[in-house]
Image (cartoon, rainbow, N blue to C red; front, side, top):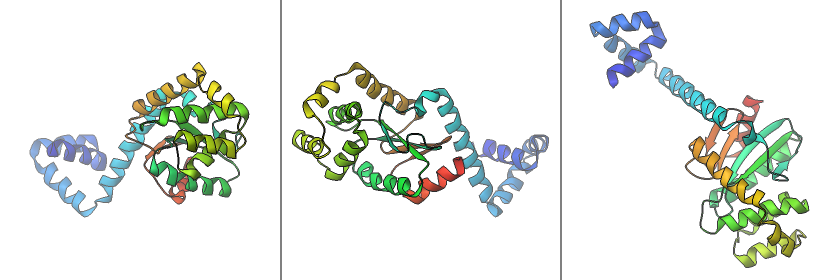
Amino acid sequence: MQRTFLTIALALAAGFAGAAAFSFSGLGDRQVEKYLMANPEVLQRMAQGLETKRAEDKLARAGNDLRQPFAGAVLGNPEGSHTLIKFTDYNCGYCRASAGEVQKLIAQDPELKVVIREWPIFDGSSAVAGLALAAGKQGKYEAFHQALFAAGDTSPAGVAAAAKKVGLDFERLKRDAADPKIVYELERNSQYAQELGFTGTPSWIVGNRIIEGAVPAEMLAQAIAEGA
């Protein structure tokens, strides 16, 4: 494995023909190892390049529908020219913490559109996610989304209180949550997450870049700027 890796590294540094010749003689391994020890940033660039290529391939397979929000499930500017996609769960503490970071980004960038993909992976999250998407039918997805995270209470009483706070018709909300389109959306988001190799929430997509975990607004802003 080490010999193969070093040969590949030499191919990138000195050309494939040279790498092949050195690999047969055994000199390649020693010279490349010496070079990489003196220039470790080469390995970092190689790793970053491989990671970028893998992300691009995964996103290409997922298709453009991934970037289109479910009706109403968008924060910030729905017509914005910069897009950030967030996979999230209301029972995820890291998602709750990152909700504030997203609000910072929205305040800083009037062109930012944040597409929310509800991905309920914790116990009891599916029902809450369905209600959140149903809030879009009353034009209050963003308000309800923020209220749920702000309260941090996804019990039936907590969800009902958040709905009341933002002026939702709760009985209608519960009926709308049974819409087959909402059920399908949650299933599709789970499929997207599996295809993209996500290991948990929150997970993000900026352009052709995949980011996992809770990250500060500054890091997301940089990724958005680089992908714009």
